[in-house]
Image (cartoon, rainbow, N blue to C red; front, side, top):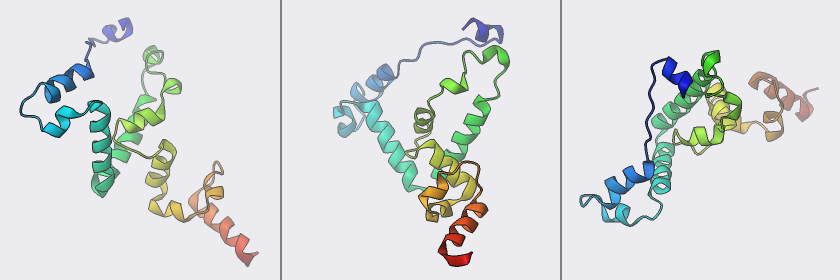
Length: 146
């Protein structure tokens, strides 16, 4: 935290459970359904993920925001690398913070190649360093083209 203070950043503790407790359980105006939920943070995260998944525009924005944030995470100054260590970042958890249900690898493939990447055989998707065009050519050759 001292490294962040050098840059003028002061951090405080934010207790999500306490926020949810006040906003939902103790709030008389909150819907009864939400007031009765035992694991409100998990429930809200799941509902938000369903909502994002059902809305193509939001899903596209969430994917792009996740990838942009991941790239930005890698650009922190050397002094902050010990705090913002990209190798220690759990990308699946990070993706879920953008209300994404998809694994990070799939998010990147969809943004990079579009939705058509699903039509390609899974064995070609797993080959590292190959582009969509190369995968298509190789999968076509297996069907008697050469």
